[in-house]
Length: 295
Image (cartoon, one colour):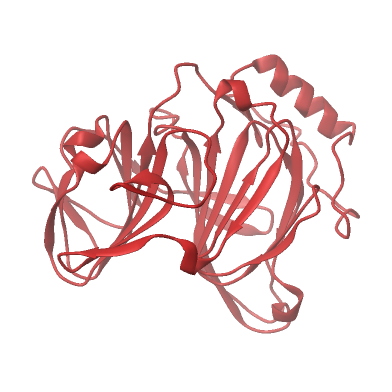
């Protein structure tokens, strides 16, 4: 990948009772295109006494993208959706003016050994859509565009690239791709990309500009047109990015907005419990953290 701007290392963070590796935001790089938050979940093995329980919590001003490599998560939200997420499927929830959701181990798996591994991503909304009505869309694995070029497997998880379009209903110019190769290959894919571009290495390694990059790293370039690298054998990578927004985005806990007053209103509304509740999952919730620094 030419034109490397920064390399971001995964950092440990806690989400409910579950540890994750945080990749975005980063102090020197807040966003990549419209992508503003990325957590790497797992890989984790849980016993029959352990389960994932991310309690009901709110969002505004963003879409969440959940993509699992392994395991199952039950998604519930305040607009009435209850969907089990399985590996290779895409959960796309658009918070807009406000939504509440929970993420838990499905009931039928709670008393057995299980694994969980995947990505949890936030994509900021364009300024004019930050207050849109919340929406939810679930895409099955077989609906996602896949193809092979020169022995390299491609999957377009979201957005538009390579003259293809994912059915996931995104609201800005972006892309998220999975690339897998069992052999070492030189890739020159920049003409198919645009805007800023990030490359996350799940397994294996890549080589770019005489440097080797390994798992738990994001390599960020400022220009998608200059995306050239060598993918090593038995590697899986994720490329994401797109056109950056003209306005700055701010984060306060789980809230994203181009307007700090909007964040303050959302924070107080959650403290006062004015957000809609989740039917069937409304007995407990994540309180607003007592100590948090607005970003």
